[in-house]
Length: 154
Image (tube, rainbow, N blue to C red; front, side, top):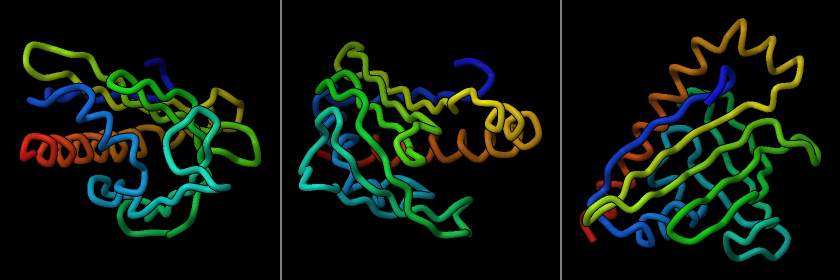
C-alpha cells in the first residue's frame, strides 16, 4: 500500500455483488463506519457512478471534531471495486477503496486508504501517521466486520 496508507481484508460468506451493493450505497455508511455516521449524494446523483459526488458527515476519532467532507466516486465496478476520493476543492486528498475478490462460496473484501503524497501529507504522515494509521486500521476492521455481519444475515 505504500507508506501513506494501509489496508484490511476480511472474508465474507456472501456474493461479491451483495457485498458491493452494501458498500457502494453510501447512504448506509452510518450503519458500518465508526467515524462517518451519514452520507448523502450531491448534485442529483442517486448512486455510485464514476464522477458522482457525495458528502460524508464525519465524527473524527469517534469523538470529534464533526465535519462534512465532499467525496467523488473514482471507480465503480459492481462486485469488484468501489473507490472514492475525499476532496479539497477538486483535488483528492485521500482515496478510500473497497476491492472484492470472489473466494469459494464467498469473497475477500479489502478496504484501504491512501493519502495523496503531497509534501503536507507526507509531513503529516511522518509526524502523526502512527496514530492516524492505527485509528484507520481499527475503523476499517470495524466497518468490514459490520458489513460482514449484515451481508451474512441476508
